Image (cartoon, rainbow, N blue to C red; front, side, top):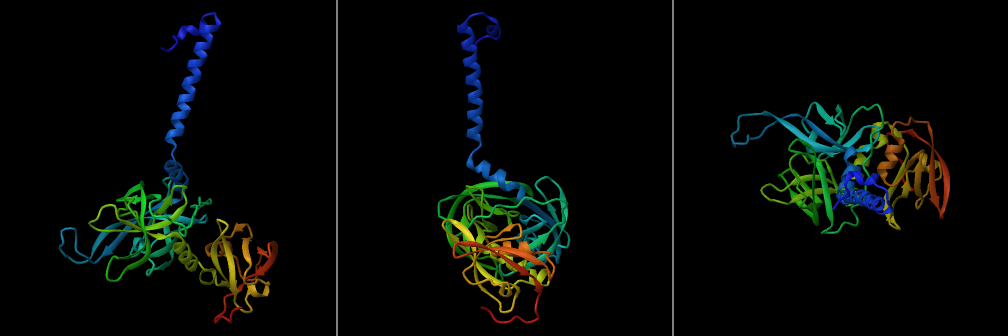
Length: 347
């Protein structure tokens, strides 16, 4: 039985302690309830949500309508999802989401809508990079790895399902290394299979692990089947994104570095595999086996980080690189050069 309100005015230690105990019990119960609601899934979604964008636009398709009748080309509403991979407004999504869309509209988690520009695309892997102009840096998605995924582990999908912004679904990894043929012209390899609900509009959105790290890019749903969706492994998606954002293509500048992202002692790092002969990296003295730590203020874990760090840097500009060689950090000055018409050999 709760202590009546006027009890706090009574004189006597017993009544005072009873009221204090009731107050303390109520406070602890409230905090305890909040902690129970803040589950790992809730935390993962809260951390990832600001980096997820909704994509929409109109496209013309040459296919039958919903009734199966063909009446020539028709306009449809296209929708999908994207993930911020660079704070300057660069977003990765599926190629089929933006293919044929003349005016790509992107809505951020805060509700702001921007018109995006297509930067690069790769229809074979069904990935594309778009960019929006922003006044302040966008929050980045925390990228995990797809090397250590386990069938049965919980996953979370966030996306623009059927146009419902930031829809969250959950499930498990059903299987790995799936090959899926969607059409005669589109075939996917090495996909993650999940029973987290993947619907039209989820394409291009993140598949998260329970820690909130992105471990895949949602790409397809099996038509007519329930609980069968697929995602591109994040390591593959980030490698393709690095190729699409190469400064040699975007800026016409050259670093000449070749490397690979690997896991060492549970952490991802970028190891130099070689350098192009007479390239800026070669002239700066970089060697195979060096572990690249930082370029300027950007921490390097993947090839995508290298391209992001040098994006917008003009030819002839000196950049400071931190590499680890023989267990010791070493500072190296690399001066970018114009991209050559024909590359020289490699070391």
